[in-house]
Length: 409
Ligand SMILES: *Cc1c(COP(=O)(O)O)cnc(C)c1O
Image (cartoon, rainbow, N blue to C red; front, top):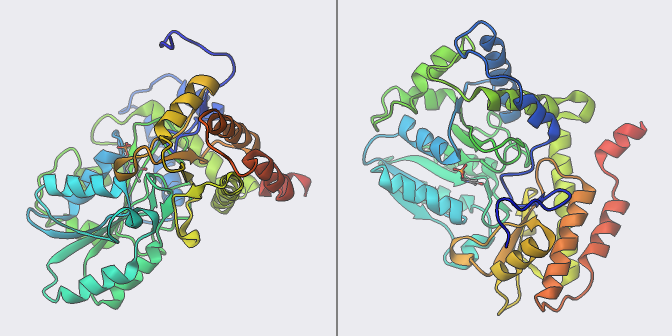
């Protein structure tokens, strides 16, 4: 009955953890006419987005922008710094980490998986001491890179990237640190330079509030150095021509101009000092996440992340009671209330669903999403301990947002 011609009234609630809703300001910015990417006007746009995205990553070093999804930027990171047969140590926090490991193997790397065993491993962040211990055993320095996911979007668990850097350094090991912050960037706190990351991979459709279609590699001087001798085949993904041409604000091949208009607008929105800049971005995501978790606790349901010190500010995984198919609950909520929630992925399919609370949200969009969840859970026959909606209302009302404080000042 629901076809592409079906247009329900009101807005659709896109509460999946990416793509996230695109704000009107960005949609309008993207509706400008496409310009000549080799013409005189383009350099200004190119320079603006390249400088803006450096501030978002908190880096002084080059950031490469690809017309590709995040998966492309994963491949770019690996093939620019590694050679065929290189050993890489990859930590499995969840489904996205597992997909990156699969990709490394397909590229001809010797990918060694590390992590806590079984489903429990998908409920906790990266254990930096396990990485340190493994690197200390590698006295020959065969391992060329350590790969971790900053915000594991399949589970709602973040990882302490600084702790991973410290573990590598404490082991006295020269491995590069590659981090997937596709869903962490511009929502969870992230500092590329200060945390000593060599390559950060990110994408447009999560915290940056853009449609899918662009992705990033943020580099370090050591990563750039490694790219000069790395031998995995690359052409489209090669950093050298990109970094060189970007100095003039241009790109070696056609960039997605209209998404770059959107990116320029997104950087203006995120970095705006009147709104509190990146610190305010991180704070509002932490607050939304706590409001959503307050609802889940009131329902009496379990949160997928079992370690409160690494709860994701970006999304929350909600475990359904034994015998309740989380995907059936999701489907009912979508059909009845026009609300999209994230599905369980990989090992935890059917056992949980994900509520995204990133990007262009506010208290009332989250209240609407939680109402949809509560109605859907009840209609699915789940016995709830109490009202998560009431608990979240109390939380949001009792904890004013920073922007409200700014307005009042
Ligand atoms: C979304 C996501 C990806 C995949 O990115 P695509 O844009 O779908 O290729 C990879 N890793 C994480 C952590 C993600 O959230």
